[in-house]
Image 1 (cartoon, one colour):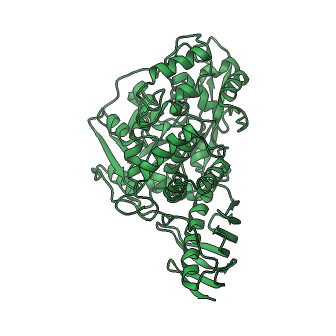
Image 2: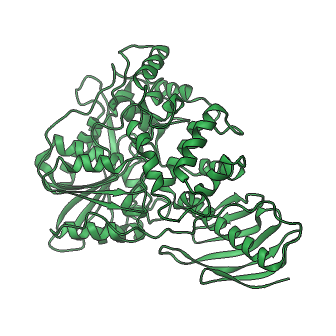
Image 3: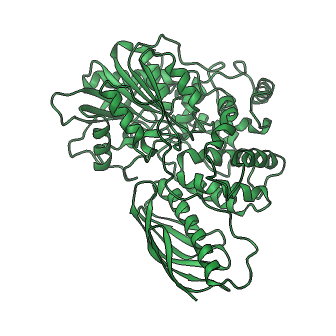
Length: 565
């Protein structure tokens, strides 16, 4: 189903996908809160809370880690019981006790579990979820999450707290700071969602998209694949709106493009695949869409996402309006607000997503309160498509002690996707009382940009041409592996463009007659030799294929070497 542009804005963690049990210094507890704080509807909810005490004396304080979505449980996302995560966040926030809890409706805090069948249309999925949750769905708005955070603060005994929020977590952090300013020490906002966003039509995201896409190809980065990546995306999207290809429509295509800001493997693949599709060869793009749809989103609660987004939002319809009237209201109010795209882009906005949700009246905005004068640091990725840098700048302008750091070459969720470490260094400088530079150097990409897929190859390839195609095939495989590995699956099997498979593990992948052209197939095991960007790979592959030179090649220092006959 098509969802709002800020949906699934999750944190990519340096930890394993498996949830770690409490222990090893991690203290787990529960906090019971009212379902309805007005007292009109009885019932309680139990929030799962995890606390990792600081190892330093004296303590610097307490910092809450707040994940995104909405719909992602923070305790599950940050996984402080896992050694790598604990070490990462302790190093990032030295001297702080770390607190993460699953928001109501997520993780281990009464998960709102709504089915998301890809064969069911979006309107039926949303209305079916609302019916399944019943009237209790009205108690999962941002103000409810704010008061839950306050209840946990009281339970852990911290008078003033710092908050690190990511994506929707930044909106929740801002809302808490406005509602309880006396209890906030400072805010770290990563990929900023302002209190009055998302707007019902995704206006800012769609309008900013062309300039953001241009940042994916600075200089001659994409020259081999396309001379105008942004132009290709816009032209292809509008063409797919008129004529979908093999079930891929315009809105689904743009959702795939938005996913690139969380997937460095996908952003390495997209320029060549989009250009090929625009030239009438859609197979590379269709493969990417299939792989992206297989990625697990089990840690994101669709029910909580809808319950929060459709309650928070302000929509252009009146209380009690029918779906037909709501649709007419959307189409009338959205004219001219969708950037270079047509009315077909409306399904990407929260208004369209919430068509079938029985919102209270026209929606309930987060209450506007004065923001406190506290230290605030905002981080924004130059490749972030779903929370544009203009949002971070607008929020920081409201804080006299605010600072904004932009990290070019990085997408959404900056701290956990920045391979350069510049964002982490900025946080440490800020915590020490210094002012970080407002802009980082451009981060190196994790993998090489995929070049155009070979076409019109002769029936017989001599050794030099076979070697070149083998290199292109391996670059494609590296990007596909990175797409799969970033999804959190321990193992996954992905298809070659023209045949064969790639079996992805966490630090390696196996190729079995993997091809991007019928002439050249690779088989073998490739391992990650160095994890920093650019990733260094090692291993060997056997080259086969009708008409190709055959032999074994070894990957060494980024180059394939060996003999082909």
